[in-house]
Amino acid sequence: MIEYLLLWELLENVELQPDIEYTHIWQFSATGQYSTKSAYKALFIGSTHFSPWERIWKSWAPSKCKIFMWIVAHKKCWTADRLTRKGLPHPVACPLCDQSDETLDHLLVSCVFSRQVWFIILQGFGLQDLAPQVGEPSFEEGWENINTRVSGQVKKGLNSIVILGAWTLWNHRNRYVFDGAVPSLSTIASHINEELMHWSFAGARGISFLLAQAPAAT
Image 1: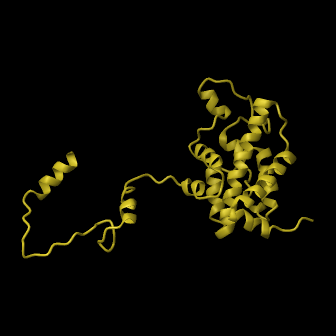
Image 2: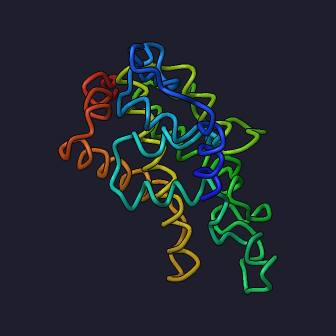
Image 3: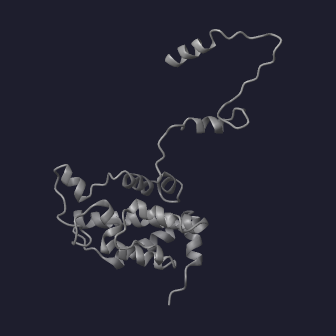
């Protein structure tokens, strides 16, 4: 209603001349012509850009894994630090390494167990140089950084691997916490490799490309 009244005030003294041809100019496109694409973009003028959205929603992965990554991006996973803030029972130390306090960034990139998992998986594709290093600032920054170092199908495959790796690490952690399972590098690596094959068959072209380019085992 307020916008309507403002428009009324702007047009109140405008008089159309019958001998003058008027045209409509759409200010949200370079040509001045309206298009649904330019209107859609105009909806987001002034909005805040959330950097991981494209890597999450435009990568090939099952919906449940993408939703999990969205929760990760918003730091809403129930790791020990968050449980502590809510006054809820929590693991005394990281369930996977038993060496440090558990935070989401620790679980996914700083934990010595997790770093070994990433190295093993990426090594299978000759991408071990992209594995998290000691002192990695955060999972999000690390993911963003390695994305700048690859392109094309490699980037697409890498993003799917990152999503699968994070999802599997989280589930491996939960099996320890809730089911009493023992953390196992061989078990989690085998599971991820099996899932990569399934994802490839299901349509993950980036993973299929990486599998075809993977160095032969020696």
